[in-house]
Length: 132
Image 1 (cartoon, rainbow, N blue to C red):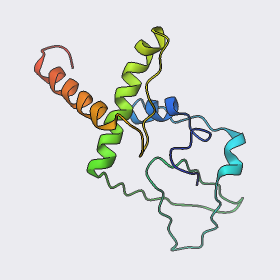
Image 2 (image 1 turned 90 degrees about the vertical axis):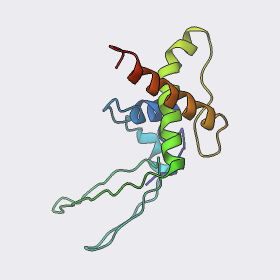
Image 3 (image 1 turned 60 degrees about the vertical axis):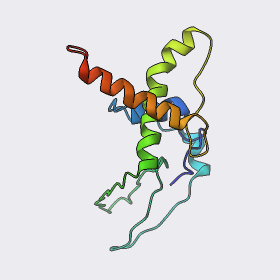
Image 4 (image 1 turned 120 degrees about the vertical axis):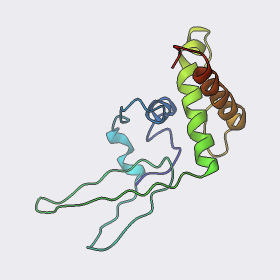
């Protein structure tokens, strides 16, 4: 498991891309391996993985693992997801202007504005015929 919001593990752009529901998983960066914490499990043990923490499972040659994910979306995580989607949508336009969006993170500024802008845009798309 890797530290959440650490751009050395998953870049800001890859995090935005993933949370914008593109279906594309972030690429693995072998150089990030040293930043992770390894956990050895026995049957019946579990691990809490914080929101936006990179993680992967590596089994032994004769091991089998079964994973169960239970995701709790809080008002804070939903706002962060909307802000990440906002960045994903606006990044190409900003790049053409020589800019880049401010990063989204737990302590990142602009999250409330980006979240509200994303929600307003989603409502407008539902109201305008043929825009969904």
